[in-house]
Image (tube, rainbow, N blue to C red):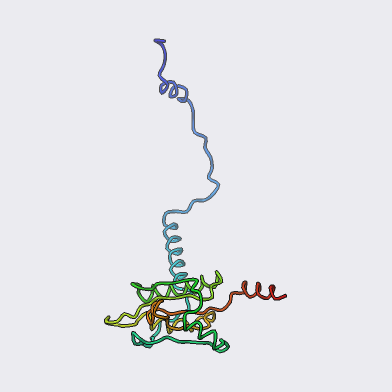
Length: 191
């Protein structure tokens, strides 16, 4: 036992005549300069992709509304009884979006995604709480944006300011078109 060589020394002793295998590279590696150029190109493409925002809601001048103004909109073809029920808050609200404390740009993105999600999930009636911003430097700014943006969606059939129990003129009911999936289901049920 006195002659025992420690493990580290044994390993080094065994490896002393070993030479690394020489392997030719299979792929030409890019130089550091080329990597920086490629990274810059990718960054520019990513920025350009963000600039091609899919959100069609316009950010141009929006006519300011009074804080207590009532929002109302109905496309041709929406029955008066259906619109009356929307106006009176008689439909079940299946989705809600609260825009309080958002900037106009944040609200623009949120509204676009909200309507898109509502259509994906077959929501027919939704509520957007935008507030009135009474007493602010720019009162009813988000409310004015909602009145301007919602008609830009083909899937928005109608909207109206909410009843007091849902936020009054600080919120808006939205009636959405049936999704293709729900239309197909209804047509199959009728057969």
